[in-house]
Length: 76
Image (tube, rainbow, N blue to C red; front, side):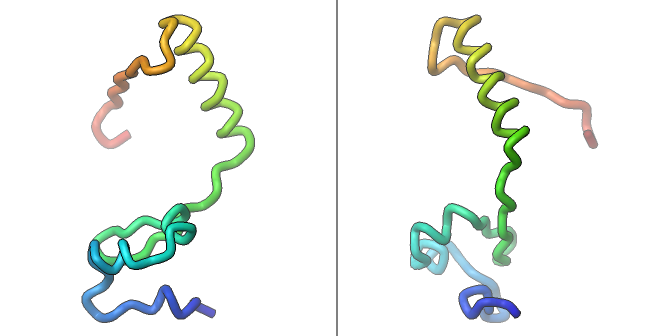
């Protein structure tokens, strides 16, 4: 069963509609072309890898605010 808050008008949701949603709801969704997309929770292994990567960047740069640029081949 779809929750009532996910039932959208034919035009979908716009920025004003998104801003009107409760903040705790917006942490788990995205709006793509007017449609609500529910983001799945990240897995524990994913979180561990991200934390290890952040720790390594901090260790190697000596900064908590270092930026990292990553490029991938088109279509990857």
